[in-house]
Image (tube, rainbow, N blue to C red):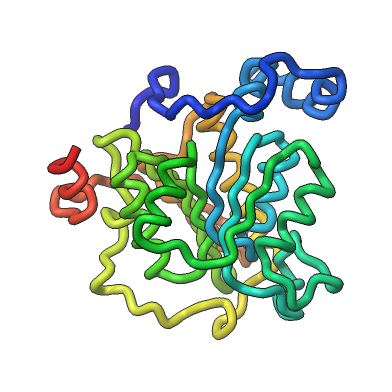
Length: 273
């Protein structure tokens, strides 16, 4: 299990908002503030938080929309793809008028329409090497809403190296999964502890296999929920647990995850830090 939330070691974000909320903010976030688990202190923390979202597709769209509407101060969205007609069945941050536009740019427009106070930074290329490390270390939490394993493994390694919590989601056909990797706690497993890169063939994607539209909304919304829980913080995060959903039967399974003592990412991180 990870560290209790009261002892979380999330970095203190740069405060680019005033500590006191104005009347409009108090009204905008009133339904959060009414929750004792969040209250004004938790909402203020959300306003000061920085999140990096990799992928503005089926999972990234609902995640981004709920993060922005909930008042996350800074959201960086990374996607090098353009909006396509076949995306609109599930990628709800985009619309018919923005077909052909970069997805990160399109998502920025959607988020500003909901909450103009949130700072949204689009990155229209795949982050690699030091650029990826820099973007990850600048964020309080990273969301992996990508659609391919090479990106997932690179992102995991950057999060392990920088001790940044990672919220990971996936959806294909009727199968969804979500997990939180507490890379700020060396006792918890990372993504590589769960998946072995050498045995995964990156063959399947939505374009070839199809995906049930609301499934991406369910998993993407849960990714936003887990992010907010970590940032406030409250509740019990999904760390060391993998939740899987069969949307055809609406059956959930919860799998307890163990740290892999031979995991290359964790071992390297422990040796270097």
